[in-house]
Amino acid sequence: MKILMLTPYLPYPLLSGGQIRTYNLLKNLAKKHEITLFSFIRADEENAYKKELLKFCRRVETFKRRPAWSLVNILLAGLTPFPFLVSIYYSRTLRHAIEEELNKNDYHLIHSETFYVMPNIPKTNVPILLVEQTIEFLVYQHFTKTVFLPLRLLLSLDVGKIKFWEKFYWKRAKKVVAMSEADKDVMEDEVPHLDVDIVPNGVDTEEFFKIRRASSSRPTILFVGNFKWLQNRESVSILVKEVFPQITAKLPDAKLWIVGRYPTEDIKQYESPQVKISANVNDIKLAYANSDLLLAPIYGPGGTRYKILEAMASGLPVVTTSRGIEGLIAKDGKDVLVKDDPQSLAQSTIELLTNQKLAERLSQNGKKLVATGYNWKSISQKLNDLYLEVGKK
Image (cartoon, rainbow, N blue to C red; front, side, top):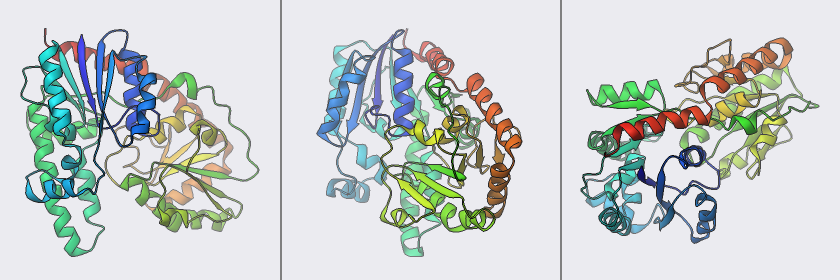
């Protein structure tokens, strides 16, 4: 089949969950389909990465995204029905390019990653498959609760616009793909009779199963997350201020290792003799290999949960919240430890660091879970089946 794929980012290098997902799907689907990729970039230097993607795509075209706080985006969000998120990615250049591409080539399917690039798709008879990596209005709705009242009212208006357009484009797509059963349930509650399927996230098991854990001289707790995302900034704040002090009260030698790109100035200030912050780890597998467990106090909705899956694939025991494990089929006490308040998270972390049998059991069970349910080959087959179902015959 001939597929036109639209993404809000170039799927290489593998610096975010979205990039990891799209890259691995492209790699596994390339032999079955002819894929043309249209992607946004933020800087011209990113064009150097196109050669890696041309291994799997017939053609790769990039389009420069405006800076988030550009005057154009502010005016679009303020003077049109579009929310700020959609305004950032609205591009006449991209829309004209898509229109020209569809006129010149007979595509069977348009694959859109995220709803907020869909306003760039002109009116067409080519069926659209929309993949929602997260339900955006829920993410922003959660964080409006954390700001002071006047700003909360302004943000709530924008969240309302996000919700309207997100649902609008769910209904425009011939098929919507969710990451989890939880997301699917929300979509079907919001839009009854919506056609939603699940294609979960995965892990490159061939790479992560190779990891050999190193013995550390002191208990090392790992947190992983890209700090462009609000959920990760909130999580690390709770971890440092509310959870980690309770752990060190019982285990004074414990060390917290925070690994993630784009840390804010507030996050950088958490660094201390017991808290290490690494913004540019070239190979995340090294972090998993040199830690004793992953601790992820996630409370915000959305996100791809790659840190959970990669840790389990690495044989690293995981402590997280019910929100953090949402959408994964992992079971509390068998594959991971799930607690929702800071005190319980700290207690479970201490238990894992002091109970080798429990840590080993979670390690082995986590690897088995990933092997059977979250490897990219089987996940790509699910998407392939949807291509064949939705695509124009």
